[in-house]
Amino acid sequence: MSAGLGKYTKIRHIVRLRQMLQRWRNKARMSARRIPSDVPVGHVAIYVGTSCRRFVVRVFRKLLIQAEEE
Image (cartoon, rainbow, N blue to C red; front, side):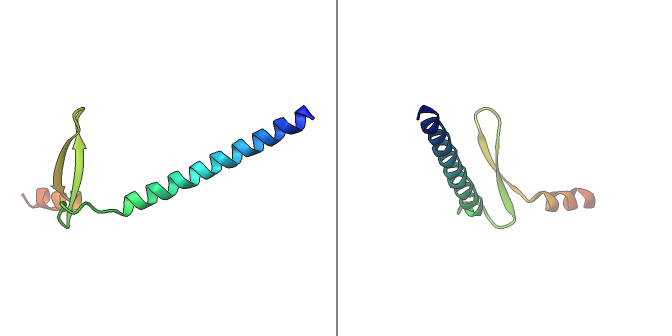
């Protein structure tokens, strides 16, 4: 009887882990779609350093083209 309960507990634990993983994936997917309202089109917000200073810079491709022209 004890072995049956242990097996049930393991299965329940696996199911809960799977549910947590699905929630985490959904949350990550939704946050990736969100675009900050203060970041203009063609720019990206980056966080730098241990204090996580935030900078808004032009998209890297445009920077490469500009550097190539100079």
